[in-house]
Structure formats: structure tokens, C-alpha cells
Length: 507
Length: 125
Image (cartoon, chains in turn blue, yellow):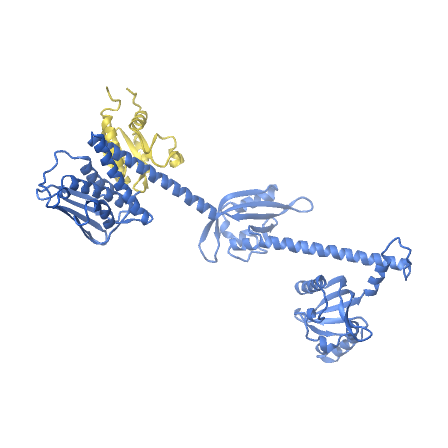
């Protein structure tokens, strides 16, 4: 016992006494390595001091099949380390290897009763665990022999002794077994509480003091140190949100309170801004032995993601509905206006379809860019390509248009190209259309588009404004807040369109 | 035949020119005169407050990304009847405007006519 023999004569005497005790003792370091043992321990285990010192207790008896018993022993040590209190194991079945009469090592069944006590230094720090062991193998064997009740066998000791020791031992074993069962059940429940995907916490008393909470609750509140604190102190941001009052109400009435999709403003990161979360939860009263409410069990789920997804979906469906209905109203208008300018059903069908297809083309272009916009040149190409790639000359920089501007300009170019094909430069083989555009004023951008027709038949102003030109003028002025000028010089039709590019995102 | 709304002036607030043109055509057929059409909320508010004369209004609920309700408030304050037009369906109106005369897009000539007759309190011919 050199550790104990280190300081002074008294310690040496104690160590000698320890060594001389007929009862087996051993001393473990907190990491469960042998720090010392007395002579009786070595006698019982048939080991040498050199073989054991410094070895981990679980590795000291190689080859012994310990199974559950080793766990029982380890648990007992862990309890002592955790609580600083002594712990008893009434009956420990712990076979160990021992040499037999011929000196051959074999595993021998052994039953022990042991007590593990903490040994602390002057500062109260646990330095060793002292094991006091009694070998109760004899008692256990005796009890076995008395067991076959009703047989004629006469026990080799007095019946009374056997019964008394048997019953006592049996009772000790039973209590211990049920303690172990309760302990493992409790551990399992605590484990489930800690690992549960929903958040849980236990509040105690009228001030709602946090007793324990699980990992999910810690996550919810930004892993703050709340245990032992009243909720008003631990989570001051809840003031004015009604939750303190709900808790007070549960304490006062003993009625549970259930919240569904409740918005809670929480401090989820230290010093961070408050964030809105949506929670389904229940405040369940906990009653004491007398039936009075002594605390509240809080349990729930964070449903923020579900709420956000549902909200987004609702917005998308509303927006889709709005767009579809508006598009239908647009188509309805095209049908009605086209019908008014064409008395012949075949001409109506042709004009109506061409306009529908122009609208559909712009939709295709917008869909390609996820309805974030469309390029001006692409729209022009789409609306003019049927008239031949070389006959419409496009010249201008890339310009991304908003969906609303793209839809309007798509229809405008369709009307311009249709008119050119019917009455203008695209009606004859020689004619050309030149489309030039530029963006002016970078801070408040304005798009200027010029449509010039050349080498077509001689031009004269129309006697009445048809749907096409009304559509162009109205789209530019009304939808795009721009200016438009249509002119009819004899050498070719001329349109000038000027629209602001950055005016929010009209629907 | 006499048209029940003949000669009435109707303010149209609608940002899509094709839909506005449709409403104009429908109103014209009903013998009404169109005031506007106006394509944004601010201009509509100015028109309501600057003394422009009209007997009723057709208001698109979503005008160029903004809700038309401030215009509706102004009309209500002046006692001018109005009808909402919307693509959002029945549930598209906030609770405070539920029950207000509303037409759903796309609309027929008769739904526009009936809604205006009801809103203006004119007896059908």
C-alpha cells in the first residue's frame, strides 16, 4: 500500500492495519485501476499484488465470462463516482479464475457481497473507491442445497440456519433485482425523455422553475443555461406573449393548456435577434401526493417548417389562380375584340389563333426563365421568325424584361408583325423591317424601341383604328406606363416605343 | 330597348390593358361611359379625390402588384358604389370586404351588368 504509506507514521500504521484485516479490501483509482489491496484480498483472489497494481479491474481476470455481472459491478462504481455516496451490491455473482489443487487455473463460481465507498482528499475530490468484499459463496451454495423443497434430503446444516440464511439472502437478492429493474427502467425513461424528437421540459412550483429539459428543448431555446431558474428569469423574451399567464393558469386551475400552431418569439441564438417559431404544445399539470399541482410538464413540437410550407403553398395556389384567371380574362378580351373586327368566322378564327399563339410563345419564354423575365431579342425572334429570318433585322443590346413587360411587348410585336405582313414591308418580297433598341439613363432605365419598315408597298394611314393599333397603344401607355408613336410616312410604317424598365413588378 | 345604366359614368381600375379594353367594350354596349381606365392605385386615388364625376366603379383587386383597398375606402367614404373584380376567387377578399359586390374573372357581359345594377341600386329595365 505505498500510496497510503507515503505520508507520516500514522499513515503507515493505518496501511499496516488495512493489510492485516481478515476482510478483503481493494482500492481503485477513479479510472477503475487497482491502486492497492490488502493481503486478505490477494488470498481470496489468488492473485499477486504485482499482477494487479495499475491494471483495470475489468481486465484483471482474463478469460472469465462475466457478462451481466461485470456491468453490475461497473454500474456500482459509476454510481459512486457520480454521487460520491457509498453503494452496496448485496449479491454479486462474479466467477474468477483460480488455481486448483494441482496448480491449474480454472474459473470458479464465486458470490460476493460488496460495498463501494468513496475516498476523498482534503478538498473533497474523490481520489479512490474502496471496495469492501465478503465472500458469500458458501452461504449461497448452502442455500442452493436447501432449495429442492419437499425432497427427503436432509440439509447438512440445521434447517433453521438454512432457512434463515436462505430467506434473508433471497430477500436481499429480490430487493436488489427489483432495484436494478427500477434503475434500468428509470434510465430508459430518462433516455427516452432526452432523445425524444419533440421538446420536453419539467417546470416546478408557482414560479415555474426549470427542473430538467431534453435536447430538443435545448435546441429550441438556443441551449441556454436554464436549469434551476424560474422561467421569467430564464426566458425574459416571453414577457407579453401570454405564455407566463398560460402557465400561471395551469398551476391555478389544474387544467392542461394546449397550444396549436402558436407563434412564439424566441431568443434562439445568444445575442441574436428574436425569431418567430410556430409550436404545437401542451402544458400538463403535475400533481403531488396530496393532489395539489406542484409543477408543469411541457411537451410539444416545432411546426414552423410545416407552417411556412403551407403558407408558401397557399400563396402559390392563390398566385396561380390569379394568373390563370387574368390570362383567361385576357383571352376572353382578345376573342371579343377580334370578333368585333372580323365578321367572317374563318378570318376570326385565324386572327384569334395567331394572337393566342403569340401569347403562348411569350409564356414559353418566361417559363424557361422560371417566370423571372425574358430577353427582348428572344421575344422579337419568336414573333417575327415566321416572316423569314433575313427580312427582320434586329439590332440592340441584351435586355431582360419583367414578365408583365414581356407579355405586353410580345403582343405588341405580334400586332406589328401581322400588320407588316398584311399591309406593310413584309407583304412584298423586297421589304425589310429594321428593329433597333437601346437602353438610356442607367439610373432610371428607359427602353427605346424603333420599328422601321422599308421597301414595302406605299403606305397610307388607316381609315379607322383597328384592334391591333388600339392594343399597341393601350399596352404601352396603360400596362407599361410608356409612350408610343405610330406614324405612316409613304416610304414605310414607323413605330417608336419608349418604356421605363424599373417600375416594380406588376402582376 | 332602354338600357338600365344608360348614360352612367363608370370608373375602371384595371392594370391589364386587354381586360380594361374588354370592360370598356362591355360598358359601351351597356350605354355607359368609361372613366379611365386607370392602371395604378395612386392615380385611382387622385381621380377619386379630384372631383372627377362618376356614378360607380369597377375595381380590380390586385392592381400592378398592389391591393386596391385604399381606393375602395375612399369610394366608400364618398358614398360612391363600386364592384370588385378579382381572379382570386371567393376567398380572395379580406374579411372586412366580404359581402362587397364582386365579379370573378373571366366575366360575362351580364355578370358585369347585373353587379353594377345591384351596386348602383338601379331598377332593371
